[in-house]
Length: 436
Image 1: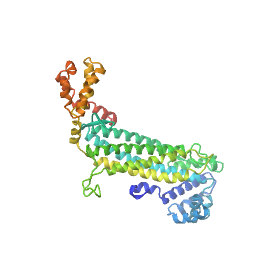
Image 2: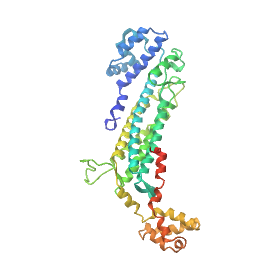
Image 3: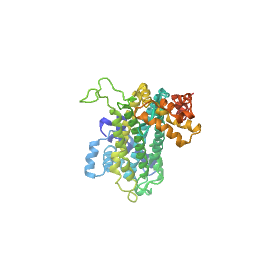
Image 4: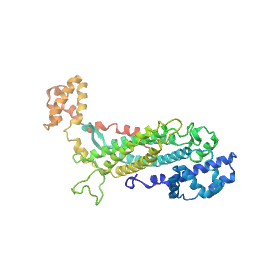
C-alpha cells in the first residue's frame, strides 16, 4: 500500500487511529449492553464513553506498551485505562481478543465494500455513456485476435457494463457475507458474556451476529470476500487489455487520452503508450495474488489459531486500497477514451469483404449446396484475398460454382454491413433495459 496507488478515503479506513476508534466503539457498546443486563454499573458504562469517546488515541504509546506486552489488544486496553481510570476494569468484560479484532475487521471490510461499490457505480455510469455514444459505431469483432465479423464499439462497452453489473452484485453479496459480529468470548461459547451483548454490538456497528463463531469468525467468509475482489480485478484487466490491443499502432481504433505535456518515452518523443491500462493489468495481478492466502486462511486449528492474522493485516488494506485505485483509474480511462471510427471502418475494409464470408456460406446452403461444398466454394475464394490477390466479392462473382447458385445482385446483398447490426438495440435492451 503505497501513495502512488492509493486514494485517501480507502487509506483512512485502515489507519491505526481509525482502527482504534472502532476497537473502542466495540468495547464501549459491549459495556452499554452489560450495563443494561446489570453486569456492570450503568454509570460506569456512561463514564467509559465520556472519558474516551472523543479522544485521539496515542498510537506511539500503544506501540510502546505492545513492545512489553507482545499483545496488541492488551496494549490498547492498557492505554484506554489511562483515559478512563477505575471504570476501565469493566472494559472487555467476558470478551476475548478475537471479539474485538474480528468484529473490527468485519466493519472495515464492509466499509471498504461500500467505497468499492461507489467506484463500480461511477465506472458503470461511464461505460453506459460511452456505450450509447457508440451504439451503432461499426468495428471489427475479433476471435483469436483475427478479424471475424462486424460488431459495434458500443457493444464492447455494453459488454463491459454487463460484466461490471455482475461485479456489483457480487460485491453486494460479499459485503453482506462479511458483515458479521462475534462477541462470544473464549472458544465462542458465551460462557462469560451474554449473547445479547453480541446482538447489541452487532446492531450498533451495522453488522449481524455470527451464528457460530468458535473463537473467531469463520474464514470462509473472508475467503469469499477476497475472491470476489479478485474476480473484479480480473474484469478490470479484461477491459484494460481490450483497450491496450485497440491502441496498438497498426490497429488504433481507440486510445488512452494523451494530455498536453505528457511524455510517452524518455528516448522516443513520438511515443503515446497505453500506460494506464498496462498499470491496471499489473494492479489486477496484485489483487488476485491476495486471493490464495485468503483461501488458505480458512483452515485454522480447532477453535482458533492466529496463522490468518498476519495475512489479513496485509491483504485487508492492500487488496481494498489497490482495487479502489484501479476502479477509479479505469473509470477515468473510459471517460476520456479517444475513439476513432474512421480507423474502425478502415480496419473493417482491410480484408476486402472477408468479414461477410459466413453470410455467403449460409446463402449457398439455402440455394441447395451442401454445407461442405458451400464452405469449400467460399474458402477457396477467401484465401487469395488473405494473400492480397483480389477482392472477395469480385472473386465470388467469377467462381462458376457460386455463379451457378447465386446472382451478382444476391451476392452483393450479402455484403451489407447493416445486416450485422440489426439486433444491437435488442442487446442494449437486455443490458440496460428499455429506455423510456
